[in-house]
Length: 186
Image 1 (cartoon, helix red, strand yellow):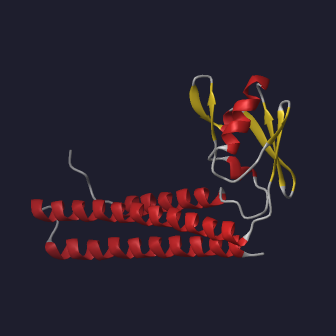
Image 2 (tube, one colour; image 1 turned 135 degrees about the vertical axis):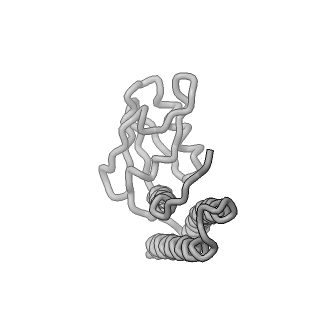
Image 3 (tube, rainbow, N blue to C red; image 1 turned 45 degrees about the vertical axis):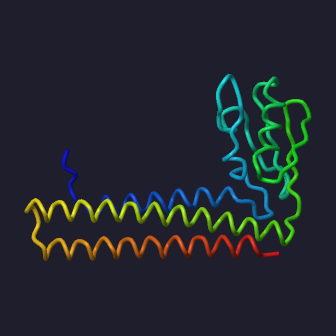
């Protein structure tokens, strides 16, 4: 199975890494309620782990409150426990099928912790982009070795792969800088 070199496919994979980073950062709490805040929460339901959005509806009735409407009343305690144990620092209050999740004011220490988490997400995205770069470089080396591509063409293509990598890393850095600024705003 010979992999073929396609710069646009490598760029597409890098963009997917950046999109994934944006989605992870959207889940970080910045003091304003957002339904995406609870996206990473999984619930032990019906014998397996399920995303919260498959067992309940999350709405934002107030700027600092989330409301979780559980579809199956028997799942309310499991959903409440999953939110509490999610590591998001939330304390849900169950009221039958509706679970209210007040968002506490972020203190300076929690803001710093959230920026560290954002930087960890960014580093994971950078590593993913570097892996994609390595895959592209391996394909180029193999094509050059097999005689499918001249040494000059391989160098030119390697430079293009490196430029795409640099652009993707720069975009990751700007995305995480914007998120850090958003988190640190009072």
